[in-house]
Length: 152
Image (cartoon, rainbow, N blue to C red; front, side, top):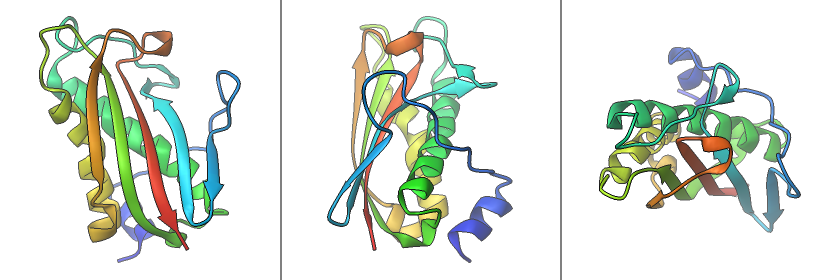
């Protein structure tokens, strides 16, 4: 099953690339490596605001991270000239989770993105990863994730 067939089976439509919120680009490529800027979680087209351990559950954070992964795949598709089949491997994911000082499940929140990459890309979606708890994310978003991929 192709990446696009898997997306369709999961009823996922990739969004258009978002406009940067500051002085940066959404993706940059050097050689066969594509770097995607951090994408914040959105719900209904607006920043998904919240703080894990205060007013959001781990499961809500996991769903937010999954939503970020969908946005990241939209940007990755654009970086690949419109063809996700050029993705050779998801190399690294870095996740920032807006959380209280005593919240310790950032890794479980980030699984929302990691598991979706695995579902779509299979073995090519297995990646190295970091998940951090942070005091705040731009616009009060609950999760921000950046990605590095190898493309053909």
